[in-house]
Length: 211
Image (cartoon, rainbow, N blue to C red; front, side, top):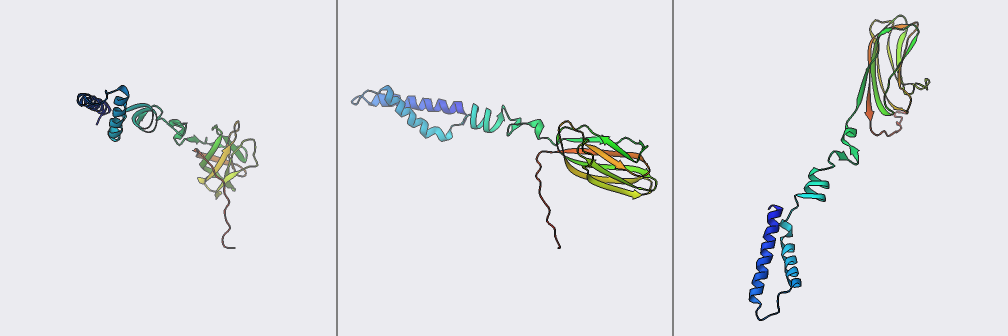
């Protein structure tokens, strides 16, 4: 039953009851305003289980509401736990590693990403002469000694590939980097690095097994 129809039915029922009571109360006391209110309250209480609210500014459950615990349509339905809908998407940033001959035995590739936690995956394809191509992720360009996600290509091979991954935390104002090296030099043919955002990161420790 629609709300407006329900309310009209309740009002009609109260009016009919009041008129009937007035018509039969010849020998009794007059029907007062308080008595009518009492009768109306009883009628509404009885009909309440079948009543519903279609529109509300605030409601636990409603078809349409500005704010609601459960709503078919809600004014703030684009937010969850006070997060905008754009914050609930998984963001990934992909970069191409530039090809070219390395004049030195190492090369550092910097990437501009927002501060936060990231899953970093990379693959680098290169020609090396006599050494092994080695690559790793440097979470902070200002901390060259901190390297994670090491990967090694074949020694002295053409089109060798080093592919690795690591979870890093990039501080504000610092760019992460991909560090690759081989001696005496290497020719990088192609490569890519992908940063996938991690909303929450929990650290744990592995357990040594077998000893």
